[in-house]
Length: 168
Ligand SMILES: Nc1nc2c(c(=O)[nH]1)N=C([C@H](O)[C@H](O)COP(=O)(O)OP(=O)(O)OP(=O)(O)O)CN2
Image (cartoon, rainbow, N blue to C red; front, side):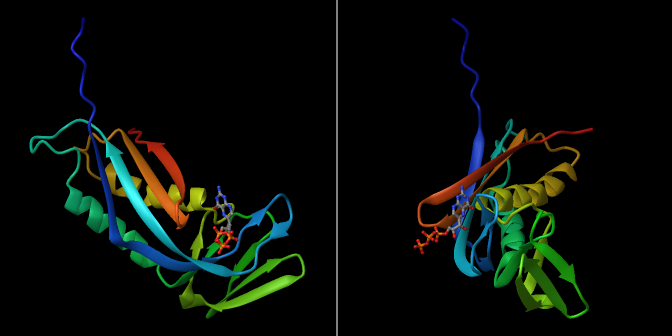
């Protein structure tokens, strides 16, 4: 029988990897939620071979990178720029969002515009994964094979997005 090949992962989550942010999503076609907030929790898992340190990836570097992304989302209104029905328009100091006959106006600095089709936990996880992907791809020596981001929107309600790391 062949020896089994170990597979390694690192996973990071912390009490401070949390962001408080407002959003509203649409679902079932044209139902649009009211603006409301959550304390979103984030975790990340990376899969890959061990390096010369015996690491898949340094916990500290992963933690600090996630913290930067979490901080960019904290105390913001999350707005989708690729939504079919929610139209988001940036003005100089304000952002206007419209859905059918509803309209919201926010100070520009209070918003983060995300290139997603809906600010679901799944798509926020995907966006966070893309931020981490850019950092991992910028390291030519990295052999990370996949990134998994988990986002908890409410207690015990997690969405996961797994992104294979492709290199050109
Ligand atoms: N798979 C997903 N399902 C749902 C998502 C999502 O992002 N992915 N999102 C929502 C809504 O945003 C909803 O507002 C979730 O909020 P939550 O507080 O959990 O729902 P409640 O309305 O039940 O609020 P309580 O405060 O807990 O009463 C729904 N589904």
